Length: 561
Image (cartoon, rainbow, N blue to C red; front, side):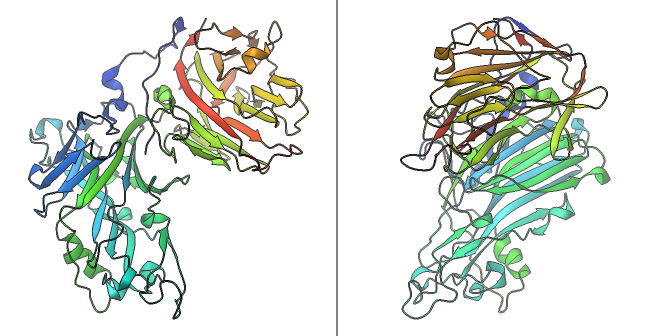
């Protein structure tokens, strides 16, 4: 399932950054997000059409999904916000992400042909010419659809499927009579059309011999990855990014794996975008697969393909919007309140921790395998990237601004640290590093740190950016569940750290640290943890260690209490 995109949580006694204002709901693209979790069948601000081909549209038949069944009229079904998105409605860049489940992995003796994915209709026309009817296209509008296409059948027990597809290069030699493909169609972007050639893996014998499991019926046991992913927790997902009035990105991902297969779309040949007329899911239910897609595969003899099975169930997990540029800095706040797999939503989870949000509801749980490794969670803010590190100019996000992190640490029997990988560049181009956080040394306790350490028994010093507290930090604060840490950039020359346990407590603030130099650029901090440091003795027995992230809150302004 999906993550919850939470509205910015206002903190009392906040000083705002110049040039930024709070409380602009009409400018918050997150208001278009829908997770389809309402038990009253509410799905505003979304609409699905045509009504003539919708038999079932329910958020309660399968809680957490929008379950859709067609009425068998042979018309494609689309979903989109009820109002078009004008190009100047929300700060650019912004992201749209959508998750869907594979329908019907098995289908009896019949073919199980389907195609579903993301649809976007981009208009370059004057808004005064836009029609009242949302199901009608404005003039000068172009479309793109990126679809997961499945043809054939699983093959178990000699199911017919599409026999010509067995051991085919299109299905990577799979003995089952089926293929999965990621396919682009439409007139918006030539570089997105056709087969994206994203492979998947089938599991089984190659080829099976008499007497081996599956040999008699020529079927493989399962499919992994790419457009065939059907893990049952998060199958396939799509990403549309609007970067400018002339540029977009389109992407595909699968399962809980980090990353997207992305393509950039240059729209300058059409002029400038005036609006996004449609954006959302599409289910292909006409005869496109049978009449156009199938013949295009150049399979001999040309297969006779059935249209999609009428009344099949399709499951839409989430349709999520958020701003991904400096002006939308607060959008990276996250409460982790909806169970599911974060995959690669707003944050890039890297390293060898397994990340999910269902085993401890209300937390993002990072479970470590027990080897010497690390995890980091980096926000996907759109900014300049140099040598793999993303920086934004301070005049794009002028201070004051702050980040608040709350986490429940692993067991204190093993050494661990939780810190932030801050990076600054001054006006002379010199880099400055800072990694504020908490470190545990078994038998000695927990400590605030300004520099992370690879030695489990050593607290590293940071000679340049050394935050200090007036008094010793109480262990009852450092051992609270969760620990709350506040990192503040007060001006381009001043930073400060706050710590507390219960949410109702006041912050224990450090002494402000003022630099002799001035920040020019700033790397948005990534929470990082090393669990199982060298010599820790940690493994996977008797249990895996976990870090629980309660929330991450980004704000313009500075909390004073």
